[in-house]
Image (cartoon, rainbow over all chains, first blue to last red; front, side):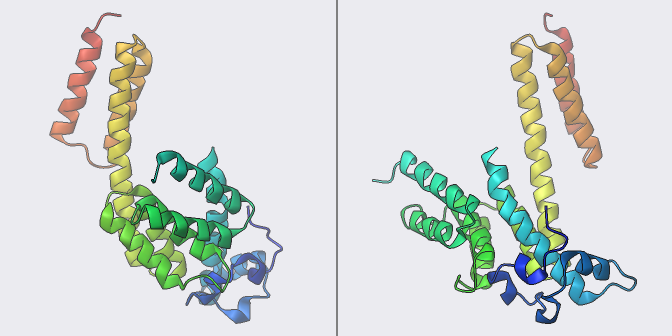
Length: 69
Length: 171
């Protein structure tokens, strides 16, 4: 579960900040703000990228716990 | 000597570090295990995952992708590697086209494995006189086959034969 109020930079690991999908100018936005922008019409391309990075990191963090079950 | 117990202990250490969010330590443990068990797809997938979770001092993201490719070079049916490659391509590379190909293959492999598992379970449960559960497994396998759009004459006949065998078996 991703903290909706956490800033993108606190949710995306340093390694993933080297991805072409990372946009430094969106780092201070919260996950909630980024989701809203990503789902806007038309969608905000940078927000869409950042949302995917946040959710990728969250999925991978959770994966070790799932493996133990 | 590289023993199975040494491998399991190493994997347990990786999990502990991972759960404690000590991704750099978990990655170091994966690299240590890879020296003894090089090119093991499971370790290569873990390496790709941990590189992504680490900080800026981790190996470049290209190495994560290379690890996934290497895992699939050694086992192109590895579900874990196919799924992780799909996620990497989608989220990190922003390449939905290539991601879709990887996920599609994962779905095909996964469906086939699940169908085989259900048929095997049906046979085992039939031997244990757990006929209702065996029927349920066959029904799930049939549903899976039809949902996957792979319903075909041979597959249907195979399931029908198993169904008839189960009906004919002693209750």
